[in-house]
Structures are given as structure tokens and as C-alpha cells.
Length: 167
Image (cartoon, rainbow, N blue to C red):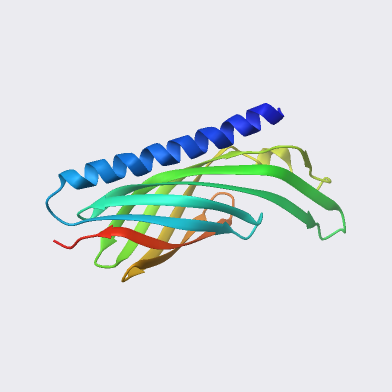
């Protein structure tokens, strides 16, 4: 099981690098405005950290992200619970309007060892979910927030615009 987790993390990093290269290469082909950005991810519910990349030629473009964290907590009945190695792979579409954007995408979750303490059912740990997000870009910097509407989890994105050309 430990080797599977490593393979998933390595696969996530490789996909991320491939997407950065693909976004940069495709972006070079467009004569009109395009944006490429990289953001760090912080997910407070599991203290997860990660990275997200997005690209837009005109108003629309894809985004891809990966984060890793661990849940620890105490239920309302003082029962401790934990979920180790929560990997979150996300991807979707971004719609830009000026320097603001909207995002919608799907998320795939993987989980490691866990003790739910009777507080959380295994059924609530579904692998697939959906997220929606908003954000803005100011000069070379960008910030956003994405919310998983099925799992009620949030993610904060803070990053930079690598390339930003206007129409």
C-alpha cells in the first residue's frame, strides 16, 4: 500500500509537469491574449498543501491541481479520528472575465490509513466529487478559492501569473 501511495504522488507530479509544458507550448501558438499561472494550494480541513496550474487562451482554459494532507480531529463526542495520506487530484475549466475568473471541475480523492472513530462513515469517503471556484489576478499575482460542494471542503490558491498577455 505504501508503494501505491508513492506511485500516486509521483504520477501526480509527472502529470503536473506535463501539463505545464503542454500549456506553455500551446500558449506559444496563440497570437492573441493568453494566461498561464501557477498557484500554491492550502486546504485547511486536512492541512493539505499542493500546486495548481492553469492556462487560458482568450476567456476559457483548463486547470489542474494536486494536494496532499492528513485529517486529524476530535468528534463532538470526544472521539478522536484521523485519515492519513489524503491525495486530491483536481481538474476543470476556467472562465476569465477581465482579471476575475470562475472555475468548475471534478476532484478525485485517495485515502490512506484511517480510524474514523465511529464519527464518519466510510460512505462519506467517496472518491469523486465536484468543486467550484472564484478568483482574481492583480498584476503578476493571483488568488482564488475553490469549494468542493459534495465533501464541503475548501482550498485556497495563491500564485503568480507566469505569462499574461492581453488581446
